[in-house]
Image 1 (cartoon, one colour):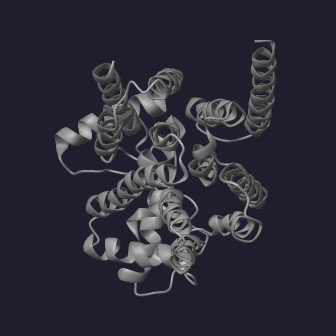
Image 2: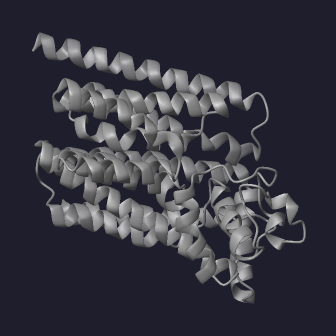
Length: 382
């Protein structure tokens, strides 16, 4: 079973890698090699000109990956998967998807350009936006070119060296940024394991719930959102907290907040643990709820984005053996990934798509609650 699972994960990671290149922007050429350009055009033909087929492929990959996710968690729960195989899966999918294109988000291009403003144009990205450099070829395939730098100083500190050593070579810089996401993803998995062992919960199950969640995989390794870097530092802060190294914990929390501000909402749980001595289950419930508040506020500020669940999922993983946590994690993660289907089909987010997506999210929450209630009633009867 272990060999079947790792083979299956590798198979789906390769499928996801290949599918990601169907979404390469039509204005972007990744390589000047003529053979690559022919391959790229053939993939783009599916993504942009055969949209029903593209959407069907994506949905099949997503649903089957979630089925594999469920099967893997069952085997982990039964202790039929060793640590070696579980982390083998994590490392395999990380290595494969390092090479993927950021198929579902343009944010990675913005990260690259923000650092480029500093390293190439010698300007401050907090005061200059991409549109201030209209001659730059990256503007032909970027979105959100009208905004100035929206992140904390830690993210700038991390990305400026990547931009510098990219030598203004797009593909080299692109994969340096992807490498940072891969390292952060693997670091998050290792830290979850360490923290879980520290607090006495099933460490491999916690690692599996977070790291093998297809939503987490896609948002961290394919789209390479900086949320995974924020999460890695947040988990390092959490590890230090349970080591009772409070100064170190606060330092790494500030570093995490300096990537993206959501992890400031970890503080209520820290205060509750420190001053009210709540047990670990209550601590992680408070932490999960606090990060849900961060997700809600981020949604109010702009609109809901599937990767916002990266705010919550690393921390809810520690109490994921509770069915009232695990069931919503699974159902809402699947629904969040399906959010991309209308865009893949229509090529835009125009009305009435937002209405349909809101209905999908509300439905997933209601379904989660109903399943939890049914499971609870069933357990009481038995």
